[in-house]
Length: 599
Image (cartoon, rainbow, N blue to C red; front, top):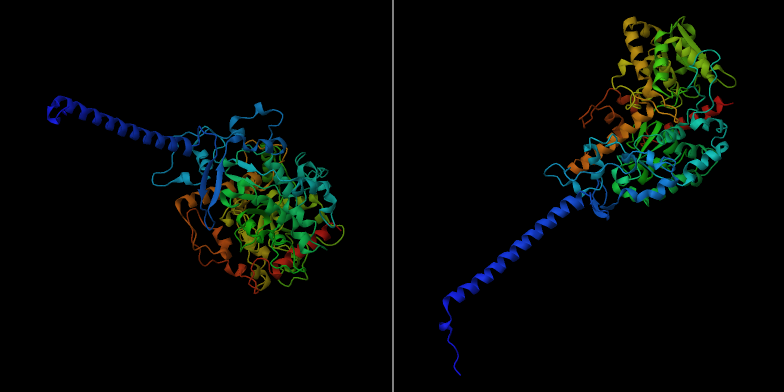
């Protein structure tokens, strides 16, 4: 049997065979290319856009000075159980009445992409930043997520209100959502509504109740511009300042931090997007050592707490994790009209006194200038003094205090037991131009709420002018022309809305109150930090000891240098700067003064 030689195969058949193999190879390559592009587009629009897939997507974040933290983006139903119990979300009984954006957050458009050249999708907070781009969402960039803390961190304290102060029964001051009992307008000093006997340390509960009415709460933490921690830090430490060991004083703070760090929300930025409120001065939370005799707790020195922002009625000039917010006044408007009517009334008042002062001397404090101020008030024919001391005093009467401030052009506001005092806000509420003697009493404290140009609304007389040079306050104030006084008073009256806390049970229609200003500032702070992380910006030259200077910088500025107020903020010789003996002593004196006010 002979084999057919290859040469006998027709040439046209060979050509057909070769063509068949080429077509197969081309089809395979085309299919492979198509599959590649399909997978690429799927990953870009679906996985990174997080628009159609409900499965968790794991992302990595490398925040400044932090290790890589895993984060899981979940859908808006991740906190369903939280909503059913949390008082901060009003959808328990009537979810159909709440707008979609308040329940689920904005529906993200896959076409919203990052700036070319930056891989924003690598960061877990990108979805929150992108809410700003959704122009149809009135809450874009303003969402707040509220932790549903166990009741031991807040509400249980109110149930035990008699233990909140050693000398004061705080039960009456926690009524009416923290405003206290209504004030009677017997002497016609107040408005007919909106006035309460509010305790100066009640900001914890007032702020928390205002947050319950915030219009942009969300149960989806992935779209939150900031995270609120409703811990009554001020009430907690007030219970244990006297007669308790450091373990008791620190217990709730350590418990809180442990609880927070176990939450997935904490992992997004290591707590840098978290904030809480404490209605006391910062020194109550800055115990430097574990000596039993040292004052306060160490909440603000805990490593985790250093990442959070704490809002206090007096902040430290040398630390970056606390921010000053106004003391509560007696006025808590329920609507815009309440504010407008009060402002008009303050404009029309006849003010017979050039200046006034309400306060007591500090004979135990050799640096205090109160004694000299009181002497000048007594000697002046155009000065008014309301002396405060032990026992019954008109200083304890809101009506007497406000009546004097309403009758004065200028109100003297020297340091209290610490830098600040509530009286400064009471006086501005009365349309009285404040006179400060230390920049730490207002100018470096309330930079969110007061103009940086302090000459627009106040007068500054350095303490040494009184202490060493015996400058006449009367002569200094008489140098200001009546026209300038009128301009300054109008500036003060215009500030009133942002210095008061509106009634937590209602909401001002158009005006921003102290709560709104503070929340807006926190959101801006967190948003800026997130953008800095994405763009790789770090404040390598930041010096925490100069924190007070950074707060005074204009928009866009980052560097600080020598300042005219440097002598006012020289650190104590012990080097602690923030909770050394002078600061701790101030906190103790403040507490003793509270006792005196209630005796």
